Image (cartoon, rainbow, N blue to C red):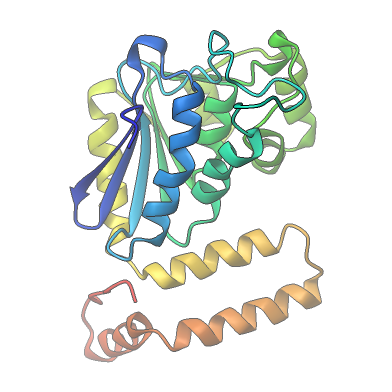
Length: 261
């Protein structure tokens, strides 16, 4: 497996995925692009993993695509070049896996790096974090789902501004716009992310997955279809071990001990 993406267990059901090209600000070369979907598919399917953190090695989250790596998909497909759409599965998996995901944004997150951070359910930012769409500066239009995530997070008007002007925003602005849940000192970033991940990993994992499914479905559903979808997922949730435990804990006036199933 490629060492451009590290997968480690932090214990308590928490997996940490680290983009690992620190000398290149974790820019996504062909090797990293090929490795990411497999890593996220692995944690998505691992029943022992109940929360996932993505972060970057060194002083950056990710500078985006590596412009020095000519294996990157730039236009018509060529023999031996990685399919961009295959690589973008990393964003979809990060957003849609049936367990909570957290981006610990430790430094610059530009282009596809910003898109990946936006794909997570939560973002915690270091004071050193910065974000920017960056694509227009390179004559690109955007990838890794950023044009889907950003309008839903900040609204269409501001998303247009951030994409068309490609001006970077700092950590306080990220917090102001709701792009970060919290901004913390650099040395507190991983402790904060791990604390949140462990809190979520101790929760009702199946219910979390169904909540994410409801929210994703709502993006294109009518109210009537949404109500039907919610009812179906409530039926699924009611059949889980965790729901039965929650009911017992309520009756016994104690905190529930969720098992993630």
